[in-house]
Image 1 (tube, rainbow, N blue to C red):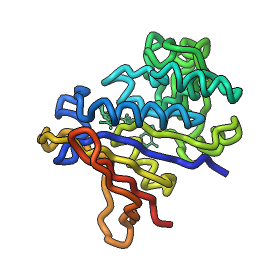
Image 2: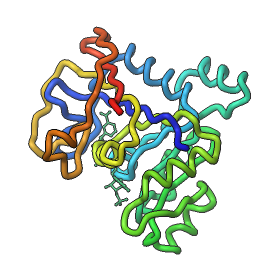
Image 3: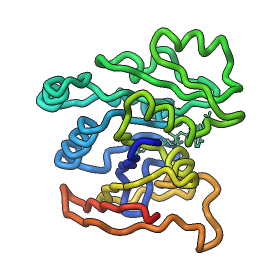
Length: 225
Ligand SMILES: NC(=O)c1ccc[n+]([C@@H]2O[C@H](COP(=O)([O-])OP(=O)(O)OC[C@H]3O[C@@H](n4cnc5c(N)ncnc54)[C@H](OP(=O)(O)O)[C@@H]3O)[C@@H](O)[C@H]2O)c1
C-alpha cells in the first residue's frame, strides 16, 4: 500500500519550472497560491527533492492561519509531514524545512548516506533508509503509508517527479501554466531524468479539468493506469 500521490507544479508557457540557473521565479499569482496552500493543508505529507531544498530553501508550511486551524480542529498537526528525498543526506541541518513551523519531518536517504551527516539530521527528522545508490521511491512510499500518510503532495522538482513517474507512483498532476516564456535548454521542466523513448512507455494522462486562474491556466490531469 502507498499514499495517493498528487504532483503540483507551476510552469511557464514553455514548460519551465525555473530558470537555467535553477533560481526560483514567480510563475503564478495569488489565486493559485491560495489553491496550492489549500492542497498542502489537505495533504498528510508534502514532499520535495534535495535539489529543490538546495535551490529554494522552502519551508513547505501551510501559510493560511485559517487552514492551519482547520487541520488542528480535525486532530492533525498544523503542518503536513514535510518530506525530503535526499540519497546522500545533503540537506543542510539549518534548512528551513527542518525548522520553520511545528510538525514532523522525514528525510529519505539511500544506504550510501554518510553516518556522520545522518547524525546531524537526526535531531530534526525521522530518517528512512532504502535503495543502494538512490532512494527506492516505491519502498519509501510504502514506509510513508505505514506512518499514516494517505495523501502525499509532491512539490517538485522535475528530477524527483521523473523518478516517481518512471516508477508508476503518480496518481494526479496539477500544473499551473503561467503567462511568460523562460526558455533555456537546461532550465528544469516537469519531468527531467532520462525520459522515455518508446511511445508505449509514455505516461498516459486524462485531462480532468482546465480552468483560467490568475493570468494563466490550471490543468488537472489523472494518470492512466
Ligand atoms: N515551479 C515549480 O513548481 C517548482 C517546484 C519545485 C522546484 N522547482 C525548481 O526545480 C529545481 C530543482 O529541481 P531538481 O530537478 O534540480 O531537483 P529535485 O527534483 O528537487 O531533487 C532531485 C534530487 O532528488 C534526489 N533523489 C533521490 N532519489 C531519487 C530518485 N529515486 N529519483 C529522483 N531523484 C531522487 C537526487 O539527488 P541525490 O541523488 O543526491 O539524492 C536528485 O538529484 C529548482 O530550480 C527549483 O526552483 C520548481
